[in-house]
Length: 340
Image (cartoon, rainbow, N blue to C red; front, side):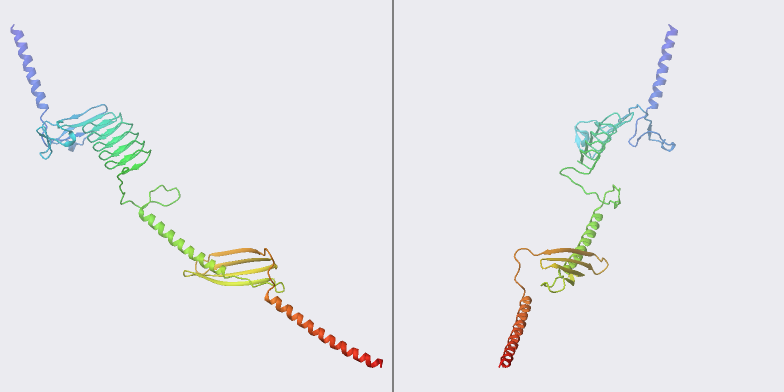
């Protein structure tokens, strides 16, 4: 009996010692305590700091010993708690690291290799990441950043509160009703094979250069057209030279050009023409034309010059005929005298 009593006393003493050691090994976390997850440097092993090494397959739940919520939080159920925890929710911060899966926040939900940070963040597809309160990713390798940001297109990114990315491999900074500008962007490379984004400044410079070049080209074309329009042939009656040469100057909005051309009358019903014009200045743009003119329909009335030539010839013939008649009369008179 004495031996049995001694064994009971020894057992109670051992339990008391072990309980004291356990209690001593698990002190209360003070208000300044923090938790480090992963490898730590020797300098991190300081007073008031707790280190937790989370390896593959581990789960970590962090719950402070007292109400950590500041007095500025709204009161729910007699306690100061953040709104995003909901009425009556416990004042807890939750961290889950399991394999390739990382959750940080209330009601987070991820797939086997997803990452979710923020209350109610959801990243269900492979390698998806949701960052922000209510951020939701239902796409492979999608990334949503911001309150209620949503991604449903594989490989896409939504940045900013309420942003949505429904297409594949796109970056969205807004939605159908909310658009955002991307500012402070460097100029992109403008070259063959470049896939860089261009800036408003680059578009402005491109438009200014195109407008300036087009305006200059229009002026050069206008001057050359005016010069070519100044080439005209002379009337052809059939008795003159068949070939003619013409020259002209043209001007349009300060630009000038010179033109030269030729006209060949193959017949009274066909004329061939050609012309060339060049601008003054550095551009020296060359314009040219070639053409053919046909007379169609009823032949026109003879020209005034033709009438004049015909009249002169008729007058000359009449003079010759009068002279011949006078000479004939003289000869007849002489013959009559000889016959007497």
